[in-house]
Image 1: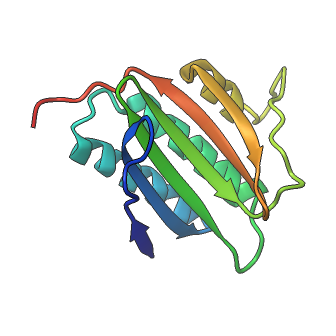
Image 2 (image 1 turned 135 degrees about the horizontal axis):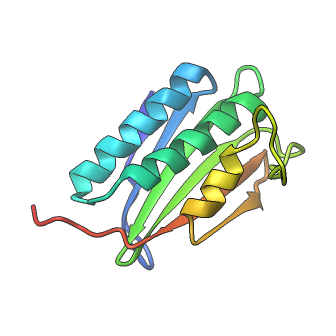
Image 3 (image 1 turned 45 degrees about the vertical axis):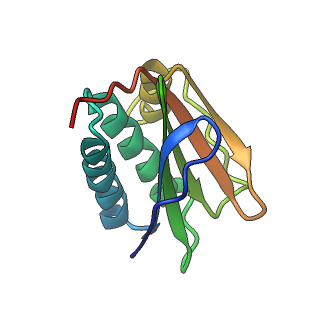
Length: 141
């Protein structure tokens, strides 16, 4: 596991990037480490971010997994919002929210409900699914 904290650029004051194995354990670790990072940044009300990270990471390891390839979690904190990005190696498998889920398929519906915006970006290898969450409020340290 390799942790990289990027130098802040542009509108973001803090960035966190982490590459994890594309397994259920990796998805769970992504959620736990995202919550810890938000806590370290002093961000309050992390429940929505935790759910979004959990859903996007789970989708990456379930639908975007390529054997031998990792997935990547990136958090970018701006003054008024948090951007969550999860990248995987399967660019041809793009997320498609189910309009009327039966036994599953609620993940992206949940992401859409919690985020102010979400989408998919193409990468040279794979794709990035991103979501923007409002009002990342910092607690005094």
